[in-house]
Image 1 (cartoon, rainbow, N blue to C red):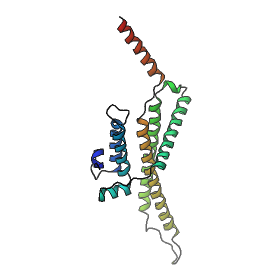
Image 2 (image 1 turned 90 degrees about the vertical axis):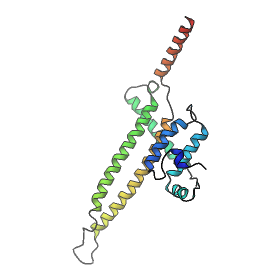
Image 3 (image 1 turned 90 degrees about the horizontal axis):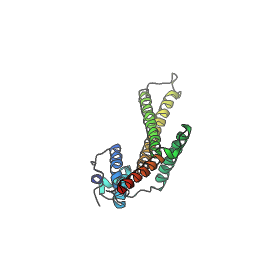
Image 4 (image 1 turned 60 degrees about the vertical axis):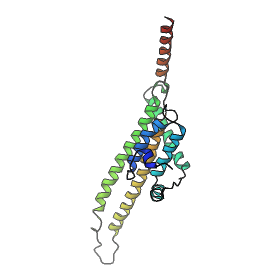
Length: 212
């Protein structure tokens, strides 16, 4: 069993963001479509990423060196759904701007849509964190005036803090899925019409040069 951390080129104390960034960087070179890649190398890298970004699987691996495979079918379905939504956004954006989708770099536009979602998630996560820190300062400050009455305002503060915690976890999961979706998107290219025309012109020029 290879060292999963060494496979990704990170330390065993690496944060999730570092692991994901390392995977995005290495997966491009390891992809079967890359001159330096292969299916075996790509799958090994994907496996390392999946294990080290799963808290339970990572903890088990750190303690025993053993790999516990996680079920990723549902996760993959969610990621593919995000890619599909980004593609929809890209196509509609092109149409709204009067562009023919076969004349633009659709992969870039799909990637931009994914990045826009990541930016929105990061902005919302910062807002949630900021408001949560404010509510934390309210803990213990409310009290009922009458002895024995419920401290309703304190209960509301506690409930709000719980909702912020749940939203923060949801945003972290959404961020991870969009990052995975972006990796998938960036592993593709789109042969738009401009590129096709350039290829034909280059071929014609090459043929002419050979004839001469």
